[in-house]
Image 1: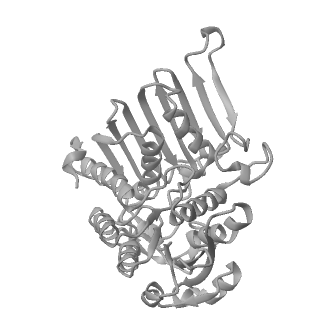
Image 2: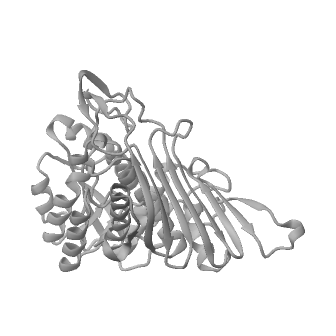
Image 3: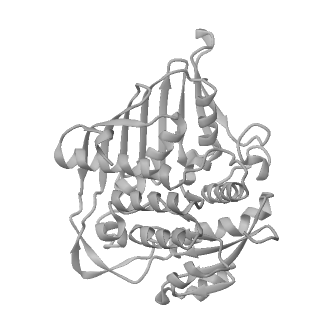
Length: 396
């Protein structure tokens, strides 16, 4: 980091995630007072993506079509990887080899082997690493984490987590998210990754066993893609008449056990009609319970089983009170709600805290932490393919 307390950031990748990261780095110093100020130094994109136009629009000082040169640039302090999954490992490993700190989109990699290599490389290099599991930074989810740490729900018995979307209908062409070589997996790596990380974070426990799984691809072929995505996951995509094979899952469900004795269920789906972005969980403990639904992301539901039975019931907490709820003191007054992009700004703030040697508001996953989530994802795929229970100790 520079002596003037700035951090030069290089973003590798454009698209949907490039926009969210660009917004985060551009906004964080406007709403927070981070100990280090990010400088939006360089943006890398493919030549056909016109990175210069993207850089000008989002405030990056430089544009590049050579990620290797960008990673090695001595002026850059932090490499931020927001590419499709297949590029995570080569870019991240090159970054840490060059002595750069590195943040990376989730899942950490397309395969377990790549995730392991990234974690080992980062440990060897001694640099700081971060993974953008942004839902940890929702004030309601961060509050759930804190309530569990305080013992408010007692010993956890049941964990139910699901991430449901409905955008991947039959008319959506064969984008990179449907190609195993580029994505690693489908709804599993894209969505189950988030809820596995979130449940590890909120419960403070680890998955010890996968007790059966099912993976399904409902749409086996899709029209080949023409053109590029217009801002969203699949918005604006057009398909040619010729079809190609889908090589990833549309849905993955699995059961699990946690280290504290709880049993759990996880479900990820991209064709769950009626669910736009329903990322949620319910956790039942011996003293209480918690419920969260990202489609109502400013709210957390809490059940206090220690209250008098006559008044027990679900309490809906609007997590917008700055004096009591994580992060929101830097945003708006009570009930002036925040949205999806704010989780990324909150994470940018925590990254800057860690780079300055300070503590984040709530724990932030590094490559080693994200590797543990990747192990769970791998175990579930093995369980689905081999139709058997899998002990996590056997998945390394």
